[in-house]
Length: 108
Ligand SMILES: [Zn+2]
Image 1 (cartoon, rainbow, N blue to C red):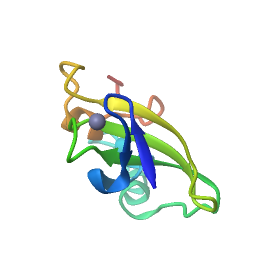
Image 2: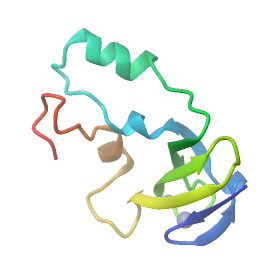
Image 3: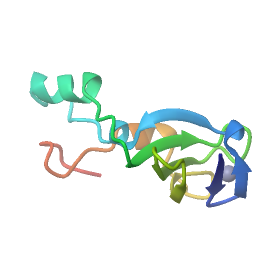
């Protein structure tokens, strides 16, 4: 499988570290109810079809990328830059602490 890094271009997937579903970047607010944290930590969809995942370009530019791919055909449909060296102030930590607008947090 090849992933097109928005900064480096098409690369072998072995250059990337898979971090899980893109919902992992949608962390609940610290004071969110236990049900929100239970869902965030334990519940994942396992779709046969289109999915969004977080990938880290470990052997490349250190960018965090959201990859949309099809789990049936293995086709990579798109790759979107979430954080990278050219986006000052958006570290990996900021990606993993981003809040949903309706999660009770105040957003970014
Ligand atoms: Zn890259």
